[in-house]
Length: 350
Image 1: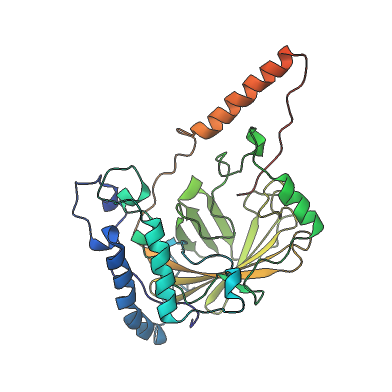
Image 2: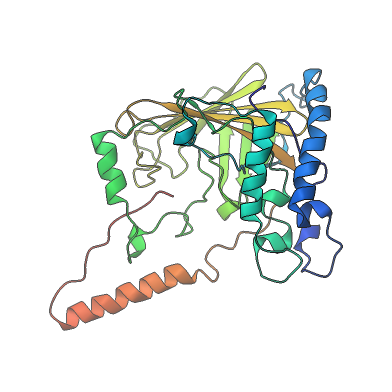
């Protein structure tokens, strides 16, 4: 795709090797120097673009395009196009590299060679990965202004009600270790964006590092579940449209609000392997009770080395533990006064 700057980091630090504490391994320059990382991305751009022009996706033994492997959904490109850019949908290559460099340097304030117990120390920060510059000024490709459409009045009410408070039910599903921060849809965050794709005849499976979420997508044409059956990750059904996997997901749990959308949320994802190291991931979200129109975003997923880390969510989740303790203390204080504790405000989205 011309829209994607196909520069990739020339060297990806294996995640297993990157677990070694500072001072116990020889760091590759692309994990310690932002200049080296950015230069590696730029140097690889021309070779990758040339290879993509004649590249054909491999097939599984049963004939489907082969998406198996480990993939990363991080990006320094903002979801929404900055307002000051107006209708400018694409950067020049020089502008894209400058924007990427600015974002990387802002994110890399900690020297990974020093002990800080930070993502960077373990080679896991975004700029140390195959995150790549993007000619797009924002990930949203529709509407044309690159912005999320306005909320409906009902959507505004739901978003306004979903404020964090000092109560368990007011905390997000990710904070409560119920779901991951990886959707669906997969909107790039700042960490925990690794995933693995498995395929077998009639099925595709996503395994997320974040919260160890698993999505099983049947590809055999079966209908969706009855509307009364609701899942945290929705009910997904997939089909192949040529080289593109199309996944339609409905039946989201009503308490799983995503940017204000809940049980009326309808999601269509498209995955296409555009070269050996890149999946082009596009998603379209629709909910007429939340937004005034549907909207679409496009995110490149670079391939990464195996494997995934264990995600032990509840261990040392002191924030949530202290929320519970604080609520219990307030409840006892209210009971001692003969009153009732304040009600929790439910918040379920991230």
